[in-house]
Image (cartoon, rainbow, N blue to C red; front, top):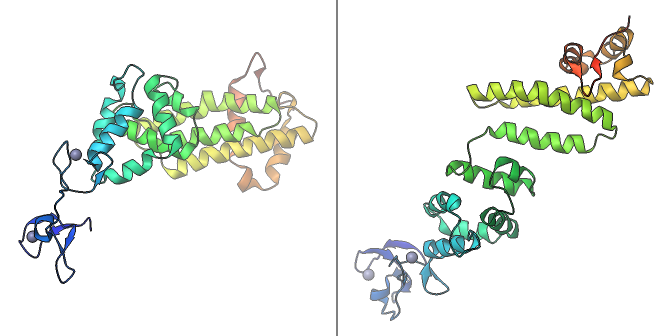
Length: 269
Ligand SMILES: [Zn+2]
Ligand SMILES: [Zn+2]
């Protein structure tokens, strides 16, 4: 019904909403349908919604409503997003996307400023898949600066990971390591090109094994300040391959001051 194709009767390449005597789709004029299918605003012939507007004009109106900054106009910073979204070949799929209440909420928040229009602002929002897709669109349209996608996903992973570490001291140590070592390292790699899956997987293992080491040490009634060479040896003897990624954290602890005046990790003999 909504197919655009060559009308078998008049050969015009048009929307074919009618049927001829044999039931073959033909254009409106050839089928004698009195109403037309031209958009009231742009004249495009196609599926018309609501007030006789085509899907693309309906999309423009919907985006204009959602991205109203509260003064009746589209938030200027978000205009490039609208332009990019309207360039789509499939306005219908964008209309369906906008029906997602989370998408509508996020767009309204960004337009009115209740959600800061920054990567950090989006970082506080959920659900993360919806946010990740919106972030991609904002980067593609130049509204937000491009950041490495793997890097963003890793930050998301860290937030979830740290939320379940029970010992606040362990969490603080690991956060310190992430801030002062891992993030610097990953940022400088990301500047040279997109981060690969293996680099992120390595970073995750470093955190997982460093966390496991701190928990293991606590089970031996030791804190990292009182860790001894014998502890490290015992740790590495078991499952050496699995536990090896903890070495990055341990080496870093040996050369960097522990947070909040903890001094350096010094191994007692
Ligand atoms: Zn025709
Ligand atoms: Zn239109």
